Length: 218
Picture 1: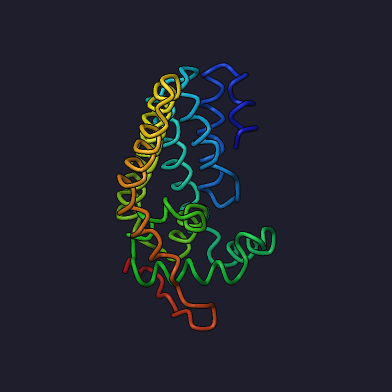
Picture 2: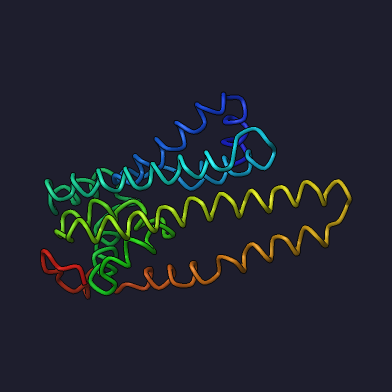
């Protein structure tokens, strides 16, 4: 991540925003890319004044929402065969077991899997295409997608921006205790989202996965 941050710091701010939106957008379409790493690196750059935090958050949210919507359209058109082809192409990230876990999450949580899936690496990649393949109603998908994308993008950006600025200030004053408190406060502020997101990982193995009816949003 340090290498990514260093590389981004040498680019004009506008290019950083475009790269951030592009990487997150393509990841949300179903292609495994380090979208969250690029977001974290960009947010930490904002703490140093290289880029603006509101543009970082906006670019990330735009990429997440648009990318998921494109992934939804592709998944609706290609169906499960498309997801299986993605699994063969990226077996380490989207293999049969991963797909079964994602389907189980949709079966248990409905569109909430889209919202909280933004905080889980597997569902962050598969939420759009899988929702389309399962014919989840687009209006409900879009609401959950937009809400999750905005909370994830702005929450992550401003959390890291605030912690980064506090760290810079306290490190100058050699206040290590203050730095530790800032990190703990930041972790506590997102604990409840992470806890809910962890439940989406608890899907049963592929052999026990329940069949999902097309057109169901629950």
